[in-house]
Length: 331
Image 1 (cartoon, rainbow, N blue to C red):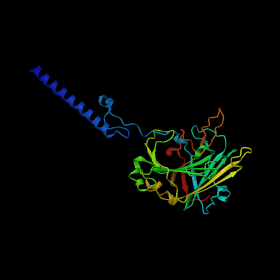
Image 2 (image 1 turned 30 degrees about the vertical axis):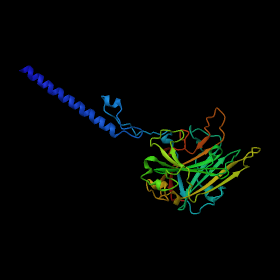
Image 3 (image 1 turned 120 degrees about the vertical axis):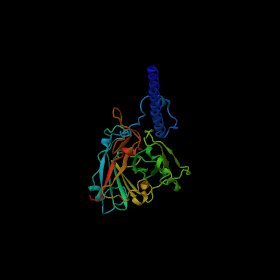
Image 4 (image 1 turned 90 degrees about the vertical axis):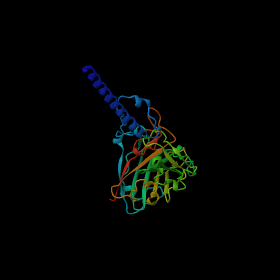
C-alpha cells in the first residue's frame, strides 16, 4: 500500500510539473506571436519554441543610430523684427550679427574638412530663414532644371524633420532646387498623406525609400515624393568669384533661404505642433554641403560635410540632425 501511495504521489507530482512546463511554454509562444514585428510573418521561430529560456524583448532603450548621441550639435535660433532680402548676398545686419554654426565636419567621420563652411538660422512669425557661407575656390554649377541631380556638384542641403515626415531641400550655385518629401510608412495612413495628390501612392513620383547608407533604420521604411515643391519658398545664391571658371580662384558662395511657416502644415501633421514655433520649441534640422571632389589622402574626406556628423553616408537620419531651439529673444 505504501509503495502504491508513493507511486500515486509521484505520478501527481510529474503531472503537475508537465502542466507547469507547458503553461510556461505556451505563455512564451503567445508573447512571441504578439511581439513579432515588421518583416516577420507571425510564425514562431523554432529556436523560440524549443528554448528553455524565457522570451526576451530586444532592448530598444539603447541608442540605435550611427551618430554619437552626445555629439549632436545644438543651436538657438533667434527671433528677428526685420526680414532679410532673399538675394544670397547675406549683407544685411541680421546676418552680420547672428551666431554662426561651428565649422562643418565630415559627414561620416566628424573630422576636419578642407574648406570652411558655416550656417545660421533665424525666424519671424512668417518664415524660417537659413544662411550658408561656403568657402570654395572652384565653384561649379551646371544643372538648371528642378530636381536635376545637383548633389553631383557643389550643393547645399537642408532637411527639416518633424515627427512623421521630413522635407529635403538642395540648391546649387545656379539657384537650381532639388526637393523631396518623405513620410514614415507607419504613419502614412493615420496622417492622411494619401489625400494629397502629390503625396498619394497613386502618383508615379511617390516611391518606396529605404535610406542611402543606413538601410536598417529602426523605424522601418518611408515613402518619398519627388513631386513636392515647398509653397512660397524663396532662395538666393551669390558667388564671390567666377562660376565654372577654373582659371582663377573663387572665394566663396553663399545661400539665403526663406521657408514660410504656412507651408509646413503636412510636416507638422504627426504631432500637431504649433507653427510658427513657440518660445523654446526644439526642432530637428540638418545642414550639409556636398562637393564634386575629395581632399587627397591621407585625409578621410567623404565628399559630404555637415554641421553635425551622421556617422554614415546618409543624410536621411533625422535622429542625427542638429537640435534647433527657437527663442523669441532677438539677436
